[in-house]
Image (tube, rainbow, N blue to C red; front, top):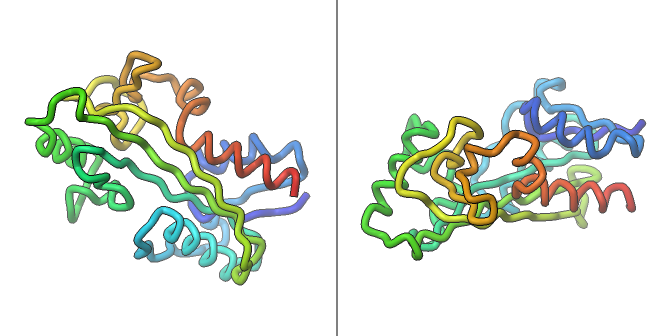
Length: 197
């Protein structure tokens, strides 16, 4: 069994990745098992931030590493908040504050101009100096609603409308979300490349 460190302590992400890779002799362990502190995310793109996190985890553990960076971009906001999605509403940002700020900024924007998408970039590094990282990405298209709806999910899910499913992302079951999410798309692509490496 080969081991890969995940540059995150998120138990849900670890479970999801292990589900895809465990049949192929790969075990993914969270960086928290090695007391790895969070990396500084000061890149200007999702790719840069994911690379920084993976390099940081690989350096401190000596293991190959996987990292992801994700966020939402809104057409009417010139693709903001992007890499700043988690801290969009400033110091002490919460999901509720971020959603409120976005709804306030879009209050005068017509429904047809509220297009948005979730992005996820995943990176795999063999070691901290790997010059050829494996990089995959996934997107989930939707639009920003005028009010929150649904109890599930996190982040912008309560205000993110999915036209194909005819519901907010926060109204999907975890199983449904894991099939169509930006993270699932990027992760499945990464798993395929790792398995065929």
